Amino acid sequence: MEPALKHSSARRREDDSRPIESVRDRIPGAARRTGPEARARTPAVELRGVTVHYKGLAALNGIDLAIGHGEFFSLLGPSGCGKTSTLSVIGGFVDPHEGDVLIEGSSMRYIPAHRRPVNTVFQSYALFPHMSVAENIAFGPRMTGKPRSEIAPLVAEALRLVSLAGMEERRPSQLSGGQQQRVALARALVNRPSVLLLDEPLGALDMKLRKQMQLELSRIQREVGITFIYVTHDQEEAMTMSDRIAVMDRGGVVQVGTAQEIYDRPANLFVANFIGSSNVFPGEVAGENDGLTLVRVGAATFVRVPGTAIRRGRVSVVVRPDHMQLAATAPLGPVENSLPGTVTKISFLGTHLQVALQIASGPEVSITRPISSEGGDDFRFAVGDAAHVTWPVARSLCFPEVEG
Image 1 (cartoon, rainbow, N blue to C red):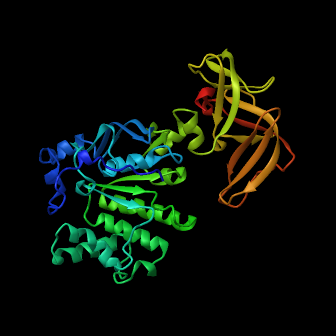
Image 2 (image 1 turned 90 degrees about the horizontal axis):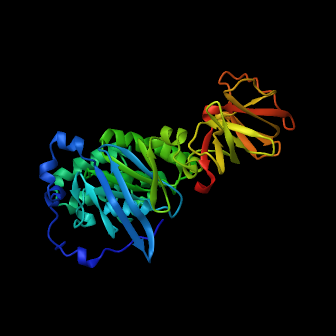
Image 3 (image 1 turned 45 degrees about the vertical axis):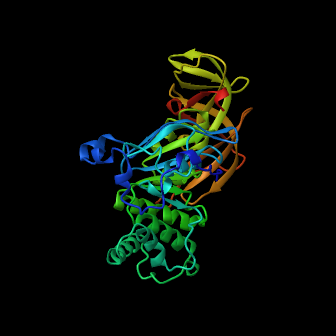
């Protein structure tokens, strides 16, 4: 997790000791934006040119984002890319040095973290160990001054939402990791914030439980209809749950889109390598033929890619393993690429086979092949066999080598 930045004291001068009233009442202009038409036009969260520096280094470089109401939106990228800093700016834990954050169309520039219409679920859960499950969940409503008679039904509904009804009196130490995560989620949702921020909340869970909780989070988000902004470095997790994903790298947003858009049409070589598996053929543009670009990937080996603006120089051709097939002979026709090689490994992965093929005078490539659900299979290759890897020309992605 990236280091958090402290608030500038010059920007936190309001008296925070007074009772907490409705957050909406404290946001300038909020009353003018509550109509359904204005809500439909206004993003739930918007970042405009947000820049953050930490110890002289840029953690965020002019981030621009617009996140819709009721959207499950993920910030995805490697460690240090700026995703947690982005979440912290939205939550009010970090002040941007430049730019602004708007929630429901209103600037958060002078609104402290505890008065913003957001809540946060952290990876560590941060449950109070001396309180019961019900007391942990009731903590937020109590702090907002709700009467006891209103808190009990709110807690009951939150427990139902996360499937923990009947565990009200347990302490956090009596719960599994997955149950503690659900309590943290219920505590964050009980006040029905406009936006829920989730900072890698499943990171401490084992793989099986993590996958179960991915489905649970998606179900809960659909049921409550609250905007979720989710931070993760796990691309499969982001693709499983998200309506849209922002791929981040070195403090900037590289691409925003649905999982399929980012997988099929990555913006550059970084995204192609980070999202899903890729086979990469380093090469050099050798010319054009019939509207296709020829790329030399070996001494006398060429692959064809769709017409591209790249006319010369070093490039990388990227092909997804699931877009490739094995054949005993090279196919005939202008719409297929084909390279000869030798099968070096075959791995059974339950739903599919993963085959490694050493290309003659080229890289080793990976091919994934679904296994028939009917139990039969016509796969006839073995380790050591000669084979051709083939794929449609249209499935070849080409990027300048410098982008890697």
